[in-house]
Image 1 (spheres, helix red, strand yellow):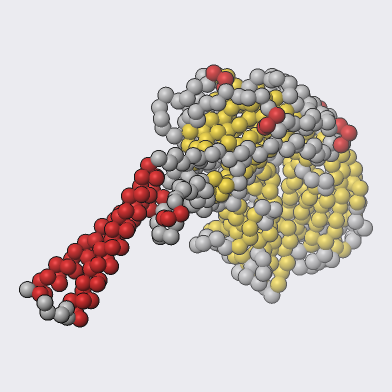
Image 2 (cartoon, rainbow, N blue to C red):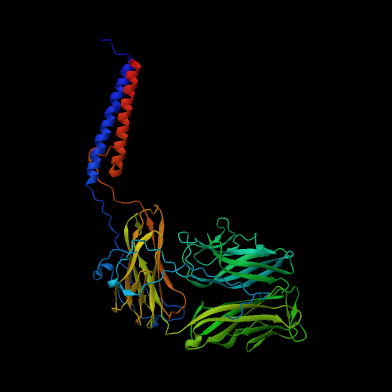
Length: 581
């Protein structure tokens, strides 16, 4: 027999090696597939964190000794077992021109019509298998006021700082429908954001100043709003020294084509005096208490203004709202005389150009219901002769001792995997000194990526009755709720299997009740959960651990790799045989 040629030796060796590896892959894949067939992958629901006892804090001017002591709130482990269920689905708001603001149209998602309420103990799973759609609460937003904080002429133009006041309960955030919330300026005429200011916008806590994507610079919010009379400031520069300039302050969602709220401001640059007004001690004040305001007035006329009839006759006037009464002027600048609601620059006294004076005035909130709610106080600065005036507003909220405060806390897993069952625990506590009036409503705003959500009542300190409704994920108590009482609820849901790893799920819950110290604003808490890769890994034998693929999916890959390698070996053998012929 002829000796084998080098080429035939190489081809034969390669065929043998490929065929051997192919058979090894096939056998290993079959073994893995057999092991995987007997495995059960168990998904364990994350352990529920114990609910911390809420901390009582004084609100507004409520004395610490008036706040009821809160009882110990049990942890989840200490609670009685609950039958497990399968989850189922005002006064004048005057700008320099006196123009009215454009009405803001609130955006409200269409709500699901709720069924008749039934106790959660008797609640059954939905008849259909469809996932519960996330319920988005009706949101309302208004731009309450725009005022000039300061105005300075510089090289023939004006540097003007405006204060914009916003009220909103919008559900902002990049993972919410509509995206982040943004407040900025639009339709500027004769005025623009001051390019010489390093930080043109001053935003409230929880907001970010700057430019977001293609939007004009402004303030951006990436979490839920439950705020009234938020204050923003923006520095602007005019392109002229006289005449009028204007802009629209607009509040909108990042991906929305419509404004949630807007208000136009027109400023007469020829106005000769400016005035601002601020309240001391915050916005919340107890009915029957005294409230002090600080007023700052500035002469921007370009010349001295002279007091007294027959001269400029400069006057300051307080407009007292219903539910408040005038008290006294506690700070009066030199060369001014105050009586009742009026202050006047003294006769023949000159008020120098580009200078300011400061006043403090004290008002009293009425007792009882008359002193409850929002009170908008207005001050007007004007000249009877020779100059144009200006006005400013400031709003406070009065409350009664019969009002109370509830707190809400929410706990849950810090991380989950696609397909996991999750449980959030919600604890509501009456930390006020008075009973909370019904209806007391706890709502869970179930976010995207959670399905089959069910909100259930767990227990309470007073054995109160709560009715839970799954169509909008609410639990309601229709009884008076004593000071110090608490109630605990759980939301169970399933993380959708197609949620991308890295997704942040923010689940929020809120509580509302009629005699809140801050009426109309819900108390909110949220919990943030990050979606991670599954921690459950299929077991494999040590002999297979050196292979590049493991698990049931790896078994299929190994089989395909082995078959491909065998076919490659057979192909080479065919090629070698053809070459010999």
